[in-house]
Length: 164
Image (cartoon, rainbow, N blue to C red; front, side, top):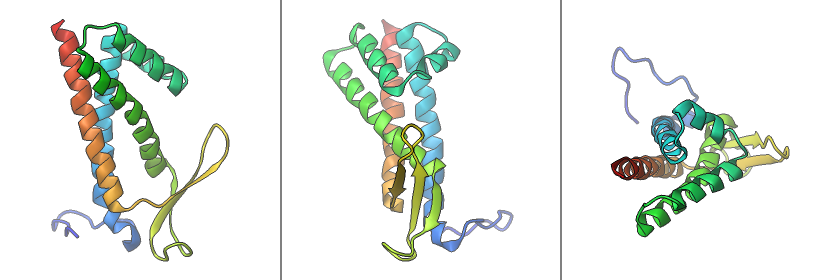
């Protein structure tokens, strides 16, 4: 565990959660960067402003995702890049849902499955189903790493589109 600098306050969370502080912090920053670049990509593909792209993305997730992939297919993006982009968009949406569970769900310490291990519990908005999660710090680090890769993928495609 990294000790705080003398002027830096100690973590406020219970010791059970200490192993998650750094990976969740990295996840938060890398997700925000990936999502910002995703917004720039959507604006580039739709020919609208970033503000209009935000409204566009407010649609049902599956609808917006399919429309963006359809628009990407009408560009002059190389076929291998287009395939990578479409796969990336698909997994970006899946990973974004996983990130939302980690950030927005209730954190608690399990007493049953793995005593003393942090877990999450949330309710899905659409259907009201309770979702249980039991990520490890390594899982969160891996998810954060993938958001870094999405940011690179999306920014590369924006670059390619701007060159055209």
